[in-house]
Image (cartoon, rainbow, N blue to C red; front, side, top):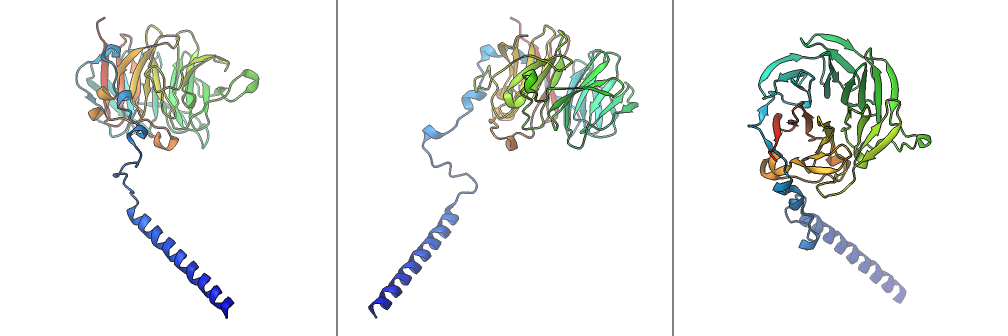
Length: 345
């Protein structure tokens, strides 16, 4: 009889413990803050405040915006370039829109698909990067060619034309495709190759930019490594520069810079997403100053650092420069162009 009573008591006690656990769980679920309005619950010393990162010392802002922002008229502007004839081309909404150097709209034409990037050759041929292939148009908007697909995983994000070659950054396959002007693939650049001391591109989000410099080397962003790397046309890695840092001279977030352009004197203008900053480096990659930051580019100056790839899949601004050194920033959120000019020294 005593053993039976003891066993019964244990069962009752266990039942009470289980009931208390269930009630505690229900209370916790009710009190759980799904909106984040209640804060982290940690002390102020644990709060990650990027307001200081968003502010740029006025002495380091080397450029000023020239006039109001220019509406592109597009719902989804995706890419910008300055052509050799100084015309400004913007791709988006299955269209190409043309502007002059002061931002007046001078033309447009429709294209067969949604272009992600654009480049214009010396002879005026217009190259558009669709998701998986390149299309070619003339100045009137007549389609001249549609090149073969680069594969089902291809995501073309940048184009550069140099003489008789076209280079395409394929973020999906993490490689730069080297084309002849006839659309034949004649090389692949940047694939991981230990024998050539090439670690490969790290591309957590669909931002992967390139350009050909006056020294003949191809400059390619390796966004996950926060670097710009220099390659020969045959794919040899010559050097690179850039570092991960929250400081103004570095690149922060999961994968930056997202876009860049080469200045007439050989320097670089870079653009970062998340914490939106447009900055200037010299030809060797040394930090020079800033074009603009969140306070100039984002309404209210609000900005954030994207630390995870899933946070960084959109919102990257594009950038281009003209022969006079003016910087054209394409705001892909508001679909406007802002033109910045160097301040008097």
